[in-house]
Length: 158
Image (cartoon, rainbow, N blue to C red):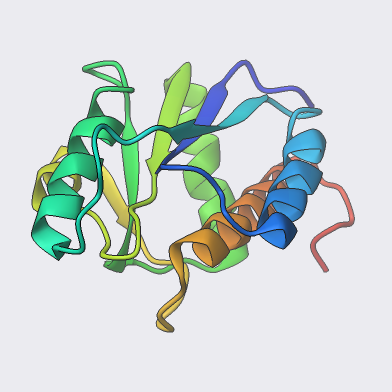
């Protein structure tokens, strides 16, 4: 089944690790069979200084400037809701049926600024474990692929 939905993941900066980039591309190709899917790497303005709050503020501006005003936003956050894969698939089904486009936002190494979290309709936690932001991106891509195969009744999810 091809959903008439555009699903975006937006991250600040570029993917640095080649194995993450390869994994993301792997799932990106598979997800595109089910919906319009893209990972947007947003260039950060200016030089990044190692001050967490300043970095989060720069990232927030970068992330929020790349999404339409009324678009649904799901923010990855360690304090967010946790789902089983089947429950996430059902949540995505509702989203796909009610919206034409949605945005998942992933912060950098310091997480997301409160400004981004308050803009989100949902906060999603992928695990109770702390995941590096690039690992979280790869896990999210895999779980999104798993969700669309569940919704399509395909055997990927066992």
